[in-house]
Amino acid sequence: MTQHPLASRVNAWYRENARDLPWRREGFGAWGILVSEFMLQQTPVVRVIPRLERWLKRWPTPGDLAAEPPGEAVREWANLGYPRRALWLHRAAEQITEIHAGTVPSEVDDLLSLTGVGDYTARAVAVFAWGARHPVVDTNTRRVIARAVHGSGEPAPPSATRDLADMSALLPYDDGEARVFNAAAMELGAVICTARAPRCAECPIRLQCRWFAEGRPAYTGPRKPVQKRYEGSDRHVRGLIMAELRASDVPVTSAEIGRVWSDDDRRDRALAGLLADGLAVARDGGYALP
DNA sequence: CAAGCGTGGGT
DNA sequence: TACCCAAGCTT
Image (cartoon, rainbow, N blue to C red; front, top):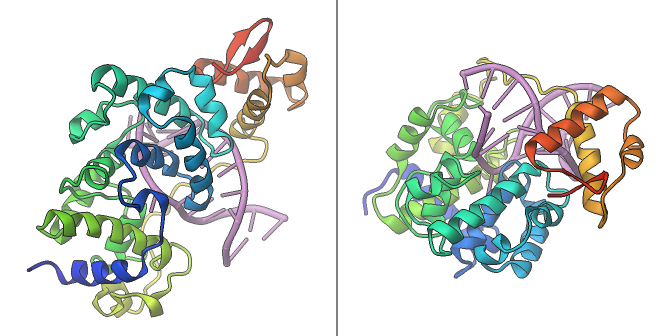
């Protein structure tokens, strides 16, 4: 079968070396894959695995999750970070239950209309859960393409049009091979072609890689915007307050919240933000999960 | 479209 | 120690 030589090599490598991850098991199910994709948005694999298994044991179907208050999703989300994702996943479960009769949709457009599902997640679910042939481009794939195809040590800022075109040019024609390649490109970026210290000596495509061939030149393009300091930030204080709310079965009092951070302005701003985001609600004179 | 959003581990 | 990074999304 004719396919891009990069795809052939990466797929062959993947078949031998892929990690045994829960969502790759046969028959894992579309709901499980959707949940895994939500959890994997900006959270590392090793932290997701135990939480995912708990989640699916508790809520085996979208309807099971939709039947509970959103705060239970936030509590079960625990310390995965970005708890808005738990709220969005709960909302998506409601939408799947009400609009799609409890079945995770298979069309990219239907998936995109779910809360918290963007371009990456919609394609990932269509491909990995339902076997459709689409390009799936995540941060790992973008880095692999930047190096192997463009000879750049780091990818340019994301551009859906260009990223999808790049991946489409490599994507095998066969649905099954395309599905494997989508997973394999991510896997290669995750374990070999890493951001920090790529293991080029172990890379199955180093001899086809433009960046390697050119001597791994240092990246000179635009730097990613520097992330603001976390310690003492609004995000930090929001996280501390959320940890309190998750840990308590009863509403948390203002006095208790006052103890998580001494700066009144920052603490009030964080709490107001959580209320506005729907991650916290006022209840019985205190604050609780929704 | 740039900014904002948690948390923890690696270097 | 600081900083970087992790299967992104919404506003």
